[in-house]
Image (cartoon, rainbow, N blue to C red; front, side, top):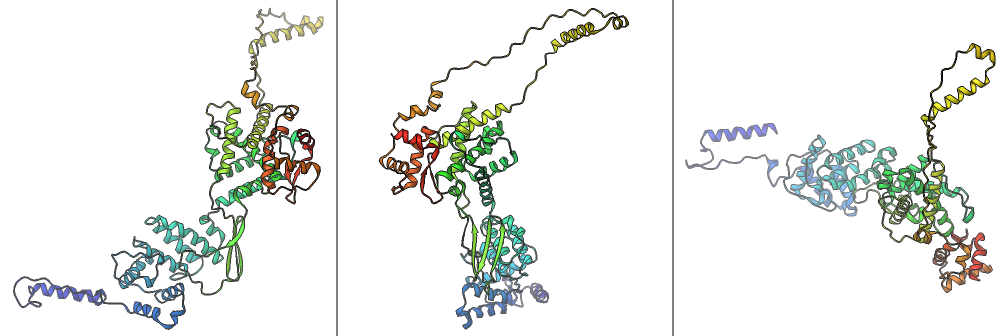
Length: 540
């Protein structure tokens, strides 16, 4: 190449020295000739590219898929370098060599040569994806960790020009680590498992709450406030990460974090028991579903040809995500809820924040959004229990009145003098008269005036059961029929017991202050024994 360039320069210099007579028969001024190497001509096509084009037209390629043809051509061109930059634009949804014309092909191999030398320059985005496809198929690098690092390095360099590449490169890095059985620590930074880990934290908290015996109605024990603040911090952080309402960003949390954290965790524990007794699904499962195994496509949206069937294997990415390959078919066991935040959980956390502000007389209240009655009353109980616990565990404040110390010293001296015998009095010097000290005025303790209950407070206060029995229960005929079947011991004949159970529990909550119906292990509604007589008397 250097000899050709030197020869071109000599010819042009000689032409200029002869004033162009070597190329023109007239002595008038004319344009100088442009001399180029053969490889720079528009019609020139390097031999490796000719062979690659011929491979695509060969008879054996007729039965190949597009992915296999790409990999076979990539292996043929693995070490090829060109020197013909391309100034145009190349765009393709699934870019391959066959999608490029000759100018684009030469421009790609010229750009790829610079990338392999460490100079990553901006080009057509489709060129960048073709280079990633080569690395995914082990072209130009050794399979395993070296290829993983090459993909990672190129993506992190080129994402400055094309940030949208993150959407695919992160997933392909995880897939590459899983497919080649690499260390999970390589893939975990690029796996979107934060959502799954937060859900797993809620599941552990729910299991812990359900492991304690459920106590209903009058036997209900208060939540163990302050028993494990570290676990409560982890639970609140998980709730904040999964909810549309962010309690950690609440103004009340900044001013009184212990109150909001404790009440929120207490409400979560009570809701876990409530869902276990009155719903077919648990609390966390109803919010985010459960982990399940679904078919998984490796290297989706990429041109990838494995060559042979992958051996059967199981790959544990972390505690929330597992990949299994069986007979060449991949499945992924994980949550498949899309990773979004839960608006239903946000409603619960906002209701806790709102009612706690009301109980604390916080100067920045939240608007009421007509939360379900069962949720409101459940939160009110936990708020009341927490305020009682905080008052009982408030630090004792000791105040010392220094003005009374002189009187105490004088009384102690008088007592000491009375206890001395005659011999001891003769040995002691005469005491100096103590100064007269006016007795300190008694300190009046502040008395907190007891305000009469307001009308709103009286309305919130639960009425006695005897008074509620005379009030209309508002039960529909099918709801009354379901209760009568359960009271008489007959099997319920309702068509949709799930909806009726929720409606009955809502309407009878004021009667007993708790849910009266729950589902058995077989999924059949049943009446809680403690409240059977109350319901029977109310329906008499």
